[in-house]
Image (cartoon, rainbow, N blue to C red):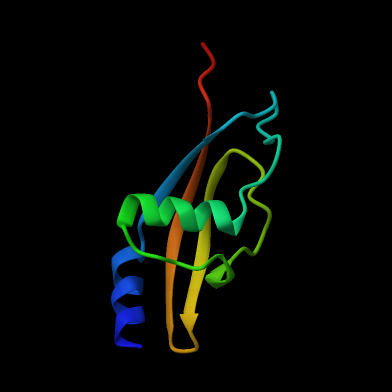
Length: 90
């Protein structure tokens, strides 16, 4: 559990940026899934978060900022910020 608290402390309040292709109205062609978020956390923070620990309250399928809860344990959780931006096409 101590390990989980450390991971929670490391990622809490951190933001992760996803550049995605989107339609004119800001909707994405797909949505961002927990697996993709856990990979981003691993790449950026070098800590492992299981996709099952990532709680999505809504679909991450539009350009914008989202707050996502990460539950490691009944007593250990963190919140991260997901920023979705559109890919600047050339």
